[in-house]
Image (cartoon, rainbow, N blue to C red):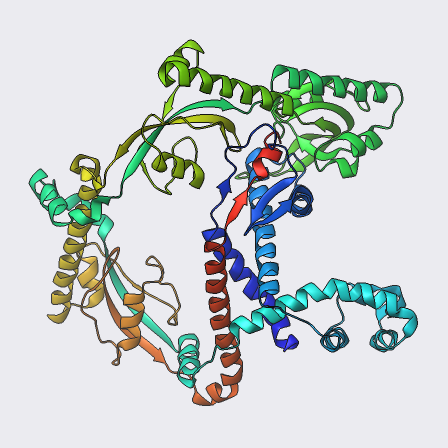
Length: 610
């Protein structure tokens, strides 16, 4: 069992990750009062509270891994992406562990022993106690498994492998009903091994658009009326928002600036720059003493570039600001490299410097966010007394009005937020929310309007209908042009001349399989299917319509695989087909698990300043 699952775990988990990233819906924290905004709960998964430290194990590890790949600070967009990926990975692990508990998955001591005996973990294969002449000695490893003096060691190893073995057993429970039929094995063999070579003429839709002409308003309106159900709208609502952006105040900048000055004073008093960077710097260069490596002009943000390039060797800058925060920089080297710029053919001299820095990031402090919350609450109180619009005017604020949206849809200025959406639909127009919060802002919402179910007005979809009908008519013209070429071919004109005379050159493929792409066309199932359905060499197909045009093909060569090859390969093909079906099933199961889980994400309230 474990041998099979050991091979399967990587492709299955890769599939799960794709499903997970494509389907997970985050519920951002709302109605968070000042008393609980800074609790240790980073999220809630099916009622289970997740602590900040749980998330930080994922986030810190992934952030370090990405930062180590580059010699500059990761841009904020990449940092935000890593946060989302870390959250996704953590949620996936927690959901799987919850399912393990639900299914009461148990791994016996005998199963653990058997697994470790057959599959020594890679980490243990480098343990000095199990090496002979620098190489892993399996006999030493097995002997240690039977030795009482190693009991504490194996207890720690058991705790390391037990979670993975439980995952394997859970997967087995989910996928063990999958079977593969002989017909599926033969189909997979033919898809991989049967080949064909074809010649083809392609009449693309893109070349026909100019011949479509103007589509009349009457035709557009007629299409709209005949397909009106395609434009049905569920009930919609809109919101008026007053936004309080989470941005560091000048006090926040000054506070961090004072901290940086103290670090700078320590450097100037003889403190070791590298050690201070390891202790205080807030980016991943800290582990290397702040070393940023070698870089040319223009590779850093302008403020950083101007300071670093003005320094002398071993000189340390005064503290200065960039959009990343406060820096001090030490220049450690200069050199000139010979490099060939992109697009050039000869190397040129490129001056570079090596520098180390200490970075202190600046974000809105808890006090700043609390002040924003107080301002938002002040606005709410005034709005309740004098009305939303009057409060906006008296406090010198601005109103943002969202576009109408349906329940659960993206909300302009806010994003996808189930709680905000529910507030908008579950309250009457004029209702004012409590203070709401997401990663970028605090905000107060007022239900502006409710709109009943209906249809998108013709004026709003007229352009889209025009594009749709233009493409449909262009495709009809492409098929018609291909029919004319086909008639010429049937009248005796060689296929090469028949196409070229009308501006559609003839081309041939190399040997292709049922899963191949055709140059210039891509993977078109209609054309591939027609090619493998043809029986006679040099036979020419009728025009084959597809999404982007119409094609005529000629079968040039067909190679059927040897059944002896099938007999030799069918066992491995069966395993591959089985694994694919199991991956698909496990992916669908995991997608369903995520969709039906209650997941609340409070990550951004902890990291809004990074």
